[in-house]
Length: 562
Image (cartoon, rainbow, N blue to C red; front, top):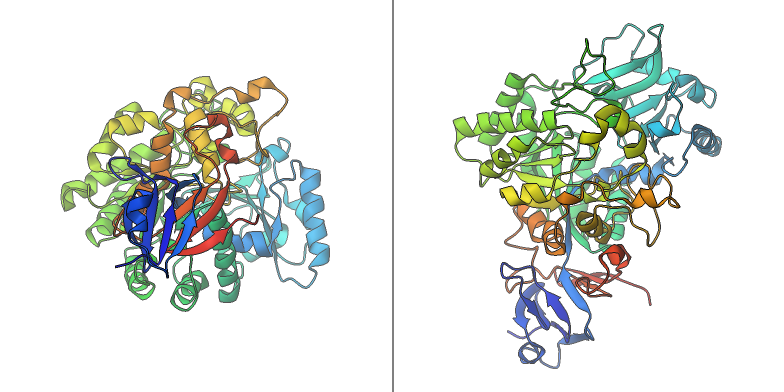
């Protein structure tokens, strides 16, 4: 067989098991025909072969986004965005401007605010009421674990001052017991379920935009971490993948809520069969939220929050009864579902590992099941080897591995200096034998630049080059040298480790490693050409590396304008 495309005279870092480098790659019918020297690859060409001279540039396997929220691109396109506001006055001005320009809407939604944008009273319904009180106004926090809502939203969700907190969530109240207009975690779901969903057409528009932007950063694979079952978004995914021209592999995770019963799995089984499109699209992942987030005090900790009273220690918001979680995890595993669990606090990690052990005792080894936990902001030392022994994958979020504004404010108060400086273990997990895959939690992180994630994974400090659009609340003071002190630098890993986490390990995490994730003969031609040799540049400038071309199944899906 002759190549239809050949890439020659390059530096090919294959990410195969031997970490082989090569000069050239031959592609035929969307698959890699051969990898070798330029002379060897040219021998596989004929007059019809399209030849690209890389002129010494580096080629890598394209990247896999192991945890994102593609469906939230609908918010970025169709709602008000607050991420760069920085204070309450700017937030309200942005929302008011949007409301005035969209007076025909039946609801106003948006996202991107941070608790650090407010004073000690936090977000209040009265501020939103002053903008619109006749329709629901709902603004999700940048981590999507909280919602700031107006009085009309409280009305349609039937949340009153006397409404009890749901399991796994809370309704903020003032000193008089009045609901303030802030709801957290599962209480936020009460709001979501009362709002109109986006349309199938809007979801498809969002998918196209997400893939376009992701391709420009070298991604050709993604796991969408919360796709509600029985909604327009899954149907839209299927329609687009069956009828459109997708440029990424996608795996959709359907959420199993604490209020759900095993009957929900019947729907999951139906939808994983209904929404499968070859190896391109799958919906066989079940998502569990074990806890919330530190800034909302809904993350579960082994030791209490530092600001809780000594006689009333507070450990966070527990979502699950352990026995109930054990049975749900066992059932999901027994029925062939992959499990992906949100675990921020060390207490949540332990709860989930206990559930995995319960399932393993009844169903047999989990090593080939490729279940995963994500975020892992804090983790007890004793649990790292347990995780490795069961083959549980760590989906890390390297974009957060620096001292951001939350570190200097909220986290210091809630966690104390010892815990705040032990955040995000990575190297110790790898040394224990845990496989690492990288995710961004997009749109919490924007833009999703994999080179930024690689840089933070190996430096653990805020970057000085390029723009400063970072996760959460960004660099607290770009002029202060202390802002660039590393966060828990003992947990830094190598560039090779980070590359694997974005390529072969991401593919492995979702059973795609036999098809993609490395540049090897027989695999799909999923590759990226970049403008620098990332092994030869200052590690503190890796985030400035540019993608020149992204190839998916042998077809160029992105090329940088010259």
